[in-house]
Image (cartoon, rainbow, N blue to C red; front, top):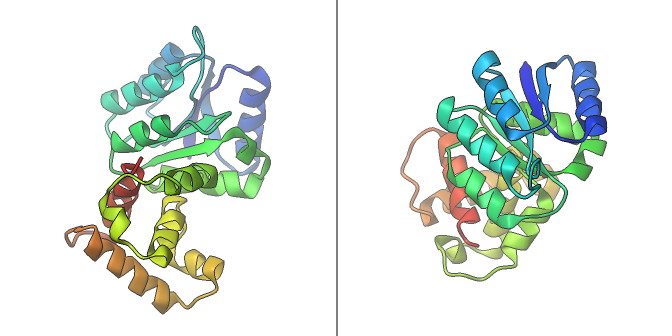
Length: 214
């Protein structure tokens, strides 16, 4: 796997590069701003871009804007965004811009190497990985949305889907059978009016509907 990293902190940039190298993942470019990200993506066509939300010059949303721009120029480019804090609208905007291959994690998750690398591989493979803190905040909001028709257990399953967990991993997390999770997932698809298609596509669409709840 080949990745591009966009992060203004030299220490984090180098640290993530070394961490990925230990896992056999090549960093083909490590840049410090949004324009550098766009140039690197166009030059290297990586399997994944790892991007900080806040970068120079204003340290507001330059990283997110660059990530969205990179996905426009290289359709389908998987993007994993890292943020210091939970910023819900950025997570929603990023995921609403595509059908998969997107993630949003707090930077503190990088310290858990196994969790971070799992998110990297999942997003690069076209899946999603949304930080559990973002999920918790979105679940606490109450705007009307098809998600409101779900039972508490189905919303719990959908929240774990948004984190990128497989059915088997959800079953282990909730201490239920695989069959029970499959039934919940089927109910979620039906209640959200998701037409039959590939399971991965429907999972991503379910996550997007969930995020639109904010």
